[in-house]
Length: 165
Ligand SMILES: [Zn+2]
Image (spheres, rainbow, N blue to C red):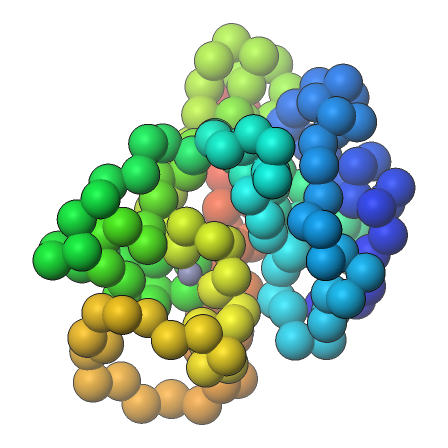
């Protein structure tokens, strides 16, 4: 993805207050981010365990989503699939994230949920920099194929956050 600065990211959020975007904490190693190897920038707030963020270029603009992380299941015997990159993870490495919808709908409490890699490092699993502890289904397909599938799912999620209902 195209690189982003911290100010740009703070301004990109569409589903939280300016105060929340201002108050978020970036990962300590932000300056070492290898943007070219990322499909989206996602992280857990180092100071607020149940807060997470995801920023993706969407229709030419950076769009940031504030997410709430549900309490982590601890089971390592069961597995579940990430709704973004479709990596199968042991259950303790998958988290249910919910995003308030953008605008009025979100202020009225409407959210959208998805299971995703707990560390929001989908790009690193697809590039095999990180390895899931769960057994993966037999799957073929190039990195490009998996990346384009991840992008499709991300853009769909962002579109749904914008949908008013
Ligand atoms: Zn994932």
